[in-house]
Image 1 (cartoon, rainbow, N blue to C red):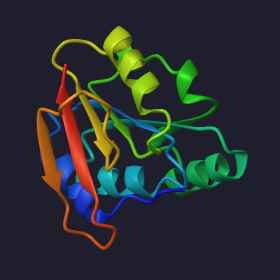
Image 2 (cartoon, rainbow, N blue to C red; image 1 turned 90 degrees about the vertical axis):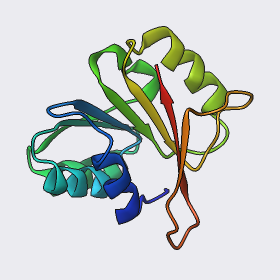
Image 3 (cartoon, rainbow, N blue to C red; image 1 turned 180 degrees about the horizontal axis):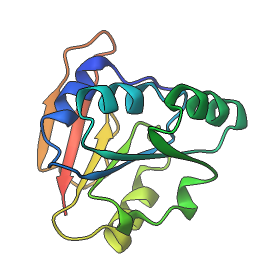
Image 4 (cartoon, one colour; image 1 turned 30 degrees about the vertical axis):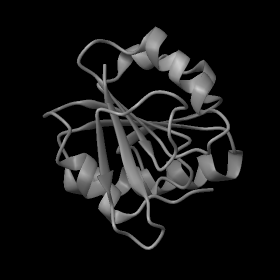
Length: 141
């Protein structure tokens, strides 16, 4: 379980267009989505989480402020979203990139917290300067 910092929320909030549909892949306990909704109430938020206890915690925490689905990120249709955010691990990034290429619309953003897509340079890198030395890797589709 990787937890996104408040700096990740701030960096994304400043780059997301008004009323965008944002998906958090592996939303964990829902903290990133809850903070993003506080900062940007205009956004339409969703999350998908595979771990039942994390999913339940996220649903309770967000209390209807985001659509939280229990299930695999691999079953989520990315074409419905303007921004897809992932803070996963290095292991799924190559396969996730193939899914991003197949499903995300032109003009959308794919944002990975910390973990790169092998062999694919991001359009922008944002050093968060937080305790975990995280960075956002951003691709414009």
